[in-house]
Length: 560
Image (cartoon, rainbow, N blue to C red; front, side, top):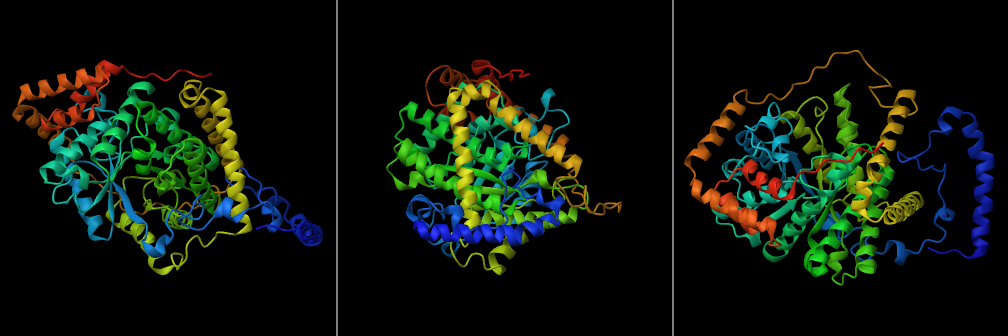
C-alpha cells in the first residue's frame, strides 16, 4: 500500500479538516471520555484511522498472504475454512477419577483435545502426602503422584486418537515420562503421540513463581525434552512458550508479547548450544497467549507475534525450513478479568475475548467458565464456555474468510505499534546481558509489578471501569452452583499412594532412581531414565528429590 506525495498531502489536508471541524468539537463535549481513549497497554488511540497511519506500509513486507512469510495474516493459507481451531478446554481437579470423568464428558460434548490442570503439590514436585502439600490437594487441578494416577487419569481415553496438553513446568519432564509410559501400556508408540508439554520454565521466574531448581539446570531439563521429542516424538510440541501467566501476573499486552518472545528465543539458543539443528526442533515449538478485553489490541498482538517470530527465526537465527518460521499458538481467555461480582457477566467477557482470539488466528482455544473467580468450574459453567466457542465457529460467520480484519487501518497501525514496542523491550533486555541476567536483575518482575500497580490505581480512581465492580454494581446475593469435590478424595489418594509404595519392586525403584541421579550429574539426556523410573512406579516426590539433591533449590533474589 503506497501513495505518491501529492495523494498523501491531499489525505493529510482532508484529515486535518475533519479533525478540526468534526472530531475536536465532539470531544470538547465529552472531556471526561476524551482522555480515556487508550488501549489497555496505554497506547493512545486516534479518533479515526486512515491510510496516513500506515503510509509506509508494504503489503508483501508487512502482511503477505495467509500461509506466506511473514505470516501476519495467519500460518495456514485456508485459515478456519480449512480447519477450525482446536477447542481444548483446560480441566483438572481433585482425584484422577474425577478429572477422568470430566475429560470424557468434554469429549462427548465436542471438545477436540484435552488440557490437563495439575494441583499445586504436583506443580511443585511433591507427593500428595508430603508435609509441604498439606491443604492443597486437588484445589487447582488434578493430583498426580505416580504412574498409577496417570493410568487412571487417561482410563478409557485412547491416546492415539486425542492430543493432550499438559500445563506443567518444573517437573514437566517427569509428568511427560508418566504420560509416555501410559501410552506404552495402551500399545501406542511414542511416534504417534500428539500433544503439548508447557515446559516453559523461564516464565516461572518472571511471573508465576512455580520454580524448583535454579535457571541453568532447569533450562538443561527443558533442552533434554526438546532433544528427546525431536528424536522420538515427531508430532509432540515439547514446549509451549507461555505468555498467559505473564499477563495474569499483571503485565500489559506489549509486555506479555515481548517477554514471551524473549523466552522462546532464549529456549532456541539453548537447544542450538546443545548442538541441535534448528530445523530439527523449531517446527514443534508452540506458544500460549492470553486474550483480554481490549478487543483490537489483542488481535494486533497476535498478528504482531507471528510476524516477529517469523522474522527472528529466519533472519536472526537462520532457520531454513519454513515450518520453523511458523508461530502456532493456543489462547486462553483472561482468568484475571473474571469477577466474583455478577459472575454471569463473565460469559460476555469470555465471548469477546474468544472472538478476539479467533480473529487473531489462534490454532487452539480455551474459554474460561463464568464461575472461575469463585471456584473450580461446574459442569454447567464449562458447558456454556465450550458452547461459546461453538457458536463463534458455527454461527458467527467469522470463519468464512481468512484474517477478515487484515488491511484495517487501525489494526495494521496497532500491529505496527505493538511490534515497535516489543523490539524496544528486546533492546533493553539485550543491554542487560540477556534473559537470565535480566531475570536475576529483577527487570521483568519490576516491569510487571509497575504495570499491575498502574492497573490497580486506575481501578481505584474509576479511570478503568469494570462492570459489576466499580460500575453498575449490585448488592444482589450470588446464586450460582459451586462445584464440590469428593470429600473423601484426599484419603483415597493417600491410600492409593501407600498401596503403590507397598506393591512395587523397591529394588527396581532404587535402581532407576540411582541411574537418574548419575544422568543428572552427567550430560546424559534424562528422559530415558525418567521413563524407566516411571515404569518402576517411583513417585513424583521421590523423583523430584533426586533432582533437588543434584541441582539444588532456587531462591529468588530480593529486589528493592
